[in-house]
Length: 100
Image (cartoon, rainbow, N blue to C red):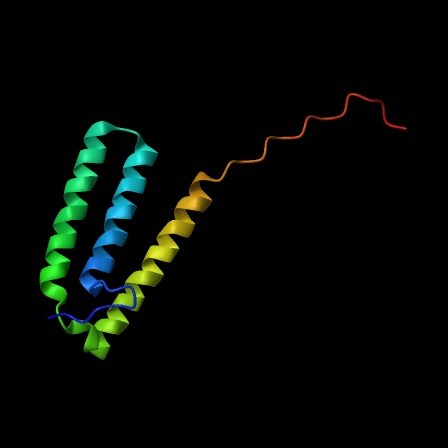
């Protein structure tokens, strides 16, 4: 049986919940029912595969290193999205007052 995390879930379940949350957030951002359904399907497929494959691998240091890389990539991806979609500051109108 796979080891449980502090909250009583397996690592695969925890990873699955993160992926489902990410898929739901992307679907909400795109606000398209077809995309929402595809994101849900993809998330569930990844969750199912991760839960089956993960097992006791979290005891393996190499697997832990790879998961940390995934976390860094996810952080970088999130920051890139934020930077890309930041609201640009509107240009300040030039003053119509005469210079002193």
